[in-house]
Image (cartoon, rainbow, N blue to C red):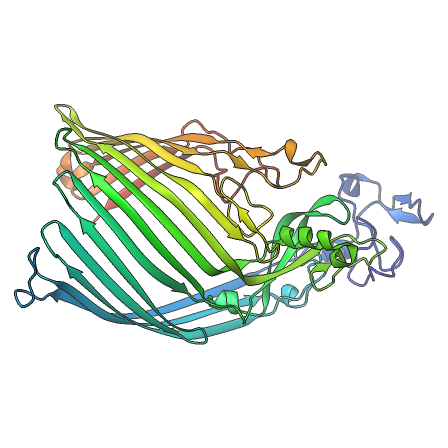
Length: 494
């Protein structure tokens, strides 16, 4: 629309609407204007056609096809059992398991010729070329587990896993668990383990792929929908973590049918594998000054410094120094058997105490719980989520009603109106209701044995997702935009 369209137009030296450089008219006048109609370009004083030419249509329209293919071959062998009376403990026989695994992974991408040649100026920023690629690797693993019923109220379990990942190294990760049952009403549990995650073939691939993102450009102070070109990183380190949890289950004999579960969990990740946050790159560059915002290795501005419109941000997969989080899972259920069926009300959810993210671009640790985390590598993290509802069962009939709550959280994206976060500083909480009915037809008619029918509604009231200050108007990583969804399922087995 700026007059610099056309396959052979030089966007740096061309004159809008002159020679090979053409305007694209997006309005209805391009179809309704009389043949040969023109308007005068006030900049050049030259006439410009109102109708779009075939050449400009060919320039702005094209097919974008990326074919990604992933193959995984897994071969497992497991030997398990107990040692019988040979090494029997007071709580029972010792259980053991040993096993091995082989995995062969393949992943690749085949892009169309337009993508290969960098013909997409919008989808690929400044005509970035998308290359075809493929890679593969083998993984060998072995594990051993043991369960020790020390007494009838104490059980200790332990396991260890070894993995050797081609081009990523090897690792040994243990896990220890304890289950204590001091009474028939109460059980207590705890586990401690370490883990290891190697970079995926996709994350190690040094070629790239393009996505679109809404970003705030500090240089011009505007918000735009831009190309984000992300490449893998052959120098990625494996991600490691340690985690533990402590929990318990209470089933009071005085209140038959009641079960309460509480579990505290704690995770610490080191060298977490993340994709750089494009907005964090822009914010960090803004803090360093204008030259950093003009860095062509990071920020593609194809029209040059005279008109430095941002068209693409280049990111890659990196290792974040650390991510630490802890929280509480809770669940309460009550089963009531009556003459008209079984009612089972329940309440379950998760409360996150901390979510501390050390961003590799910003170099700071952010308390990211309760935030959209638009400006760092963290995920959108509402502090509280819970479900509350009831199950009803009566012979072949079952009914399910549940309300789902997602807490409100901060929106750290600057308002495109320039008013700052005050205008859109919070993403509202959301409460939706789902309902489902099912029936086993075999209990009602002989010819329908092993056939069940289920019908339900997701988001019964058709509630819209909370407004978020971004293209689309909602947070696609937290909320469902579909509104009311009806479904029917037919289940059978042979």
